[in-house]
Image 1 (tube, rainbow, N blue to C red):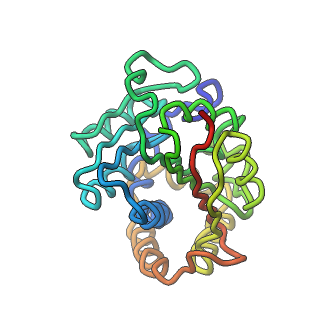
Image 2: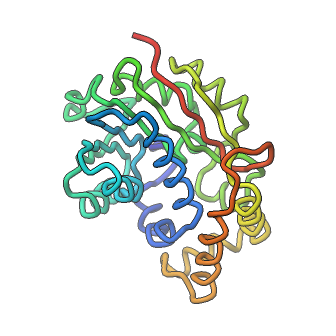
Length: 254
C-alpha cells in the first residue's frame, strides 16, 4: 500500500500478478511468516494483512489457520478483486490507511496479529505508514514484517523500491512506530542471495521480460523458478549474510 501519488498499483498487478504468484522468493517469505505465526498462535487469530496485494499470502495461510479471521487492506482495486476470488471468506478492502474509508473503522483494535510483507520498501515514510496501520492492531498484538536487504536491482527500482533495509534500520522503524522488537532475522543465505544475484545481473532487461510475457513465464523461467523453490528449502533462516530481512515485534503504545 505505497503512496498512490508515486505508484500505480492497479497497473502493477495487471503486469505482474502471474509472475508474482509463481515467484519462489514470495513463497519463501510466506513460509517464513507462517512459521513465525505458528509460534504462540492465539486460539482465535485475527490477522491483518497490511498491503495485501493480490491475496497470495492469505491464500497460503488459510489452510494452516482454518479458524482464523483475515482482513486485508490494499490500495489496488484490481489486487482486492483478485484477492477476494482467492480467499472468499476473508475481508479485503481498497484502503489508503492515511485516509481510511469508513468500512475499515470496525477493525480498529481488532487484529491479534498483523503482517506487512514487502511493502515498507515502497513507501516514502515507513514509520508514518506503520503508525497509520497501528490503530487496527490490538494492544500487545504481534507484527511480522518482511523487507528486502542487500543490493537494490534495476528491477527493484522499476517497481518502486525506495530503499532496502538492514537489521538496525528496520528495528529503528519498529521503535519509532510504537512497536517493540522481539527479533530480527537475516534469512535466505545462500540460495536466496544467489537468486537475487541473478535478478541484479539481469538488470533492466528483467522488467521487459516480465512485462512482455504479461506474467506468463517461459519454460526456461518456470524451470529455473522450480529449481530455486527446491533450493530455498536449504536456506538458513538466520545468518549474518541473508538478504531477506524478517522482523517480529509487539504493539506497545496505547
